[in-house]
Amino acid sequence: MLHCNMDKDSRDMLDNLPRGTICIEDIEIGMTRSLRKTITDRDIELFAEVSTDQNPVHLDDAYARDTIFEGRIAHGMLTAGLISAVIGEQLPGHGTIYLGQTLKFLAPVRPGDSVLAEVTVSDIIHAKRRVALECRCTVGDTVVLKGEAMVLAPSAKFD
Image (cartoon, rainbow, N blue to C red; front, side, top):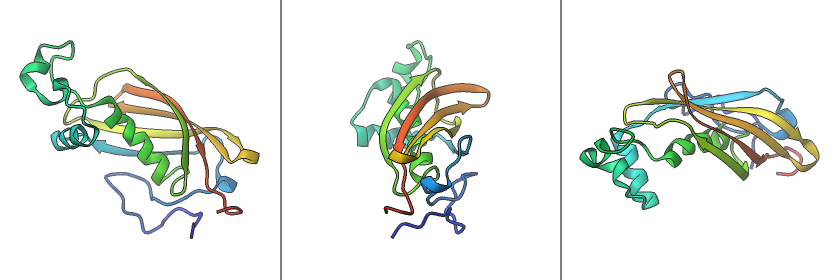
């Protein structure tokens, strides 16, 4: 059964907000949620294994030093996955269905970087339960990823 309130008994990771669900009836334009995660070598190795993307720019120090990045970088989609985590766990949260996502990768994320993933409600189409979200990831003051997502939000009336 869907519960349309933020989970007060959160399983927070770093400074993440409580997990749970915000139903479309309670979503407002400008509402923002975020999470922060430090990207580790293990994260990159696991993502390479799961995705089967074994590009040496992610995994091989010697190879990566000779690229334009001058060192290893995290997979762009690993960083984008943090946006998915905010959407699926916090805003709107559990029960949300992704309908689309645009992404622009603006700067590399390196092992050891602390990434802040933020999602902000930019539009709501109540009749269709659609929520448009501005998405961005930063490392310090540098925007490393930005984009927009469209999701189908859970509803207290229909779920």
